[in-house]
Image (cartoon, rainbow, N blue to C red; front, side):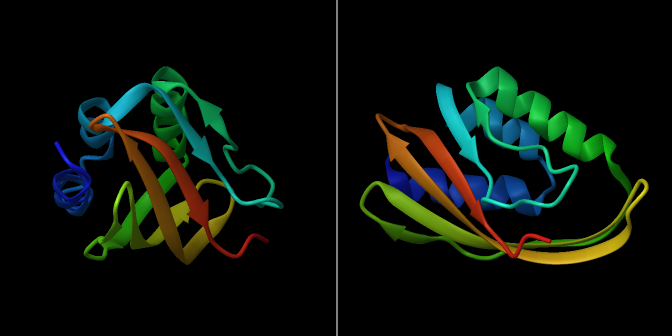
Length: 123
């Protein structure tokens, strides 16, 4: 798949709430996941490798007590990169209700996502 096809598929799966399926289908085994510097306490942090990214996603999902809404914009594609805006309104265990918006940037190499990086206001 080219970058545009991967971006469209990621958006489709995220809108369906199938995040793990997206990672298993679209990510390289050695992909990296990068959170912003100064992410809030309890943030799941950076991850190296698909297994670690899947575990990070599992732990994030377990931290959600109630999901009120989630959103994912259409992708903006530039050669081997694409970005989407994602939103989440959820009640987290021990944290209460949090509404957040983030920009997610992805790099594609040889038909797989090799890097995801998230940009949001930390704290």
